[in-house]
Every structure is written in structure tokens, then in C-alpha cells.
Image (tube, rainbow over all chains, first blue to last red; front, side):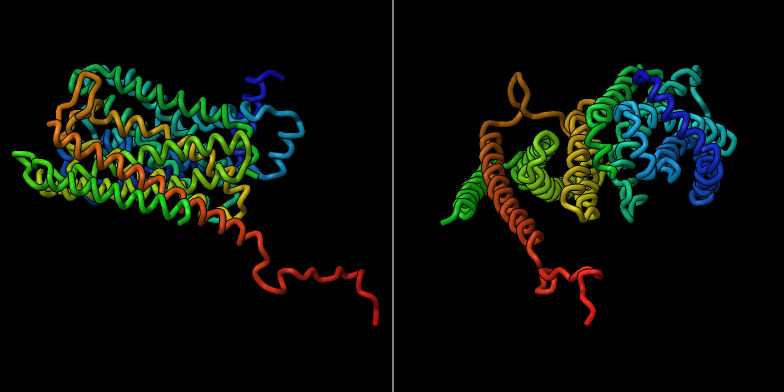
Length: 224
Length: 236
């Protein structure tokens, strides 16, 4: 089986597990929507403030909870599954690509639902022509976040304090993604070029993809 | 005198000279005495960037060779880098409080991105602490050591990327924006801090080697005794 065939197979297995466990839909998503509701309550229900901060809250919650999508328990592979992949001759880089692919698609779905929730709850004033650039920025953030989450999930696999430790690793490294995503929206609102921010997102995604594929074999060894 | 002691002696002399220049160069006309903080602030971040670069190099070298000395180099350098980025952040905040009127200004993106870099390496050190097995620890932290450098360009170029309170680079390919006297004092301090970094790194690597040796030794008398297996014991 070729590289992408292997990657798609790994992604298919991940989707099956997620379909059975429903961790993203049943746990992460309701928690994120709850957080969307907590912000206005904490800030004091001022409608003009809420309209203004809506997109910023989306990016902040998107990264914090998107991280939980990437680090979901159902994505942590048991040693037996890792052994099975290794014995089947699965390319570690294809494994990384497959896991990043499934995580990205789940994160994009999560972002879409979160965006919808933010628009309903905050009624933000969105700049003209927002759908295209927003969709592109969201997809690029989702790719980077999943790559980062996959890498952090592997290096913390099996540790007792995995959830907190992986979050501590991902959160600061995800800052270029938060900055790129939020500044794309900001530049759009100010009628400025979004190119520098799109390039920042692309460069971050590319660097993480190169790191993930290049370090795939040591990652596989490290996660045991 | 051992090599590490000699390095510390050299570092102490270099820091002494650096401080003399720092306190005897002309102060900035607007910032007054607070401008002298630059002689600690910039060298601290210089050392932090060098240290994190060394961590990345050590991590790559470990991944290629699997020799424990590279892991010790990477880990020791990360600890020192985290310490110096903490010092750099603190001195930056002291300067900000005096000159801008507030220690943390969101208009200064360099401050925010540097704080992020500090947390990245706190995560690196936490990962090492959380992984008891030395080989697994070296494997995992070397991967993170490589990935962690990805955000360093964002820290360095943040002053160019954003509209920020922090000034852009003072030393550029077309010359310096600083007076020669201040530039020389800062340069001497950068050199002094680099010597201090080398001394601290050498000492920390020696400690790490001693820790590794101690960990491989039996700690209790009973650790060295292997109990007989069940079927090796004859009935009495």
C-alpha cells in the first residue's frame, strides 16, 4: 500500500473509534459551548462589548478546545495497536499523516460548530467578504493545531499527567496559530492585506508537517 | 583549579568588566539611569536564544547518535535558557514600569511572545521531569527540543511583524541606531554573559553526568541483592 493509502487507512480507523466513542461531540463540544456562555456572564452582558469580542473569543476557545480535540483520549493508541501497525509494515510518517488528517477534519468540524455558536451568542459585526478568508484561516489553524496536538500526544503518551502536560506543551507553541487566525480577521476588518498572516499560518503548518514527518520514526519509538 | 572553576573565574572577571562599562557609559538622555538595564536585558535574551539553539542542536544530535551526552547538553542548556529568559523578562518588565509606566504592556508584542517562549521551555522541562526512564526521557524531550525552536523566529521578528511599542532591532546590516559607547558596553556584557553561560553549562553537564552515574548505582544495600526465584529455593 502506498503512503497516502496507509495514511487514509489510519484516518479511517481513527474516525471509526471517534464514531464509537463520540468524545468530540459528546464531551469537548458541549464544554466549549458552555465556555462560550461563561464569557458574557463573566464580562457583564454588555452587548456592544460582546459584539466586539466575539471573534476573539472564538479564536481563544477554538485553540484551547481544539487542542482537546487533538489530544482526545480516543486518539491515544494502545501499545497493541502500535505493535500491529509496526508489524504490518506501516510507514511511521504515514501514521503521522493519517492521524493528522483525521484530527484536522474533526477540528474543522468542531471549529464550524463553534463559529456558529459564537455568531448566535455574540452577534458579532463581521467585515464584508469574511466567509472565504475566515474559512481559509480556520482550516490552516486546524491543520497546525492537529499537527501540534499529534506531536504532543505522542511525546506524552502513557504519562500519568498526560492531559495537563500535553496542554502545557501545545498551548504556547500554538500562539503563532492564534495570532495568524485572529489577525487575519482583524486585517480584514481594517481593510488591510491578510497575506502576512496567511503566510505565517502556512509557514507554521509546513514547519510542523516537516517536523512530524521527519521525526515520525523517533516519535513512534518515543510513544512506547 | 578544575576546568569548570576556571570557566567561572573567567565569567566573574568578564561580568565585573561588563558591569564597570555598564555603569560608566553615558546614560540615555531621555531614559536616564534606566537605560543601563539594557546591559542585562539584551545579554540575558542573547544567552536564552543561544541556549535554546544549543538545545535544538543537542536534540538533533541525540536523535542521530543516541549518545547520552547530547541529551545532557540539550537538557542543561534548556534549563539555563529558561533561567535567562526569565531574567530577561523580569528586567524588561522593570524597565517597562519605569519608562512606559507599566510592567506589562500589550502594545509590546516582543514581551508577550518572549513569555510564550519561556512557557514552551517550561513545558520541555516539565516533560523531562514527568518521564522517569532516562531513554524514554531523552527520546521524548529531543523531539520537543527540535519542535520548540519553531516559535523562536516569531519572537525575534515580532517587532517587525506587529505595530509594537518595542523598538525594532538596534543592530542592523546597515549599521547601529545606538551610540558607540552604549553599543560597546552592551557588546562587552553580551560577551561576559556568554562566558557565564558556558561556565554554567559545563557545571550543569557535570552535575547531570553525576546524576546519571548515581542513578545507575544501587542505592540501598538490598538493591544489589537479587532474591532467588520460587523454584530455585529448595525445600527445607
